[in-house]
Image (cartoon, rainbow, N blue to C red; front, side, top):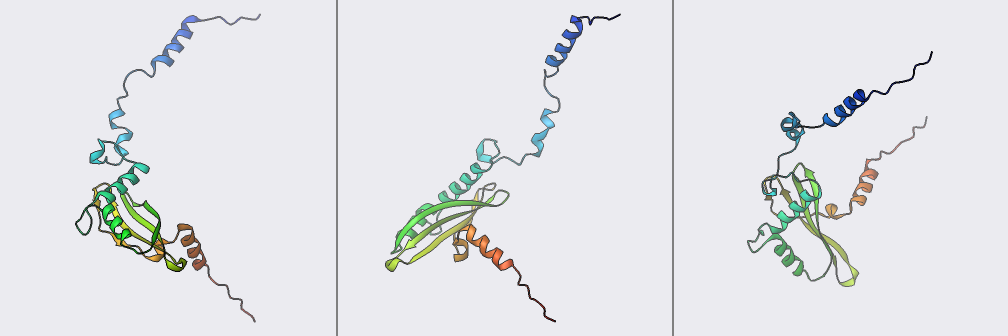
Length: 170
């Protein structure tokens, strides 16, 4: 004797009610949840936590708008005066920010000089910007090894890391 399955509307309504009603209401653990693990917010950002490109842009803006070392204007004005004082053509001026630690960035201004006789040289200045404390260090002139493209530095470093293998003849 075969029994046919019976339709139970009460069981179906109970199941739908549990699914729909299970997500209603506030989570009592929400105020103490994942927000405790977030880094502290930047004061001027309205309580938001800055990340990635926003932090880099803040570091560059802080550096450009910081007072110049000679006391006349901002760092951006100071860099412009330095570049204009050179008797060579200045090509590819560029501002960059590289993260060095949590909340600390190295902001650099690099350029290429083309002089008489097709001589080419690179120059640049660097600052350390702290986006948490909103501080910028005085500028320093960059060394030639810092001005090389990153790919060249990595290639040279790998080449220097290789050890020579000596064959021992018996």
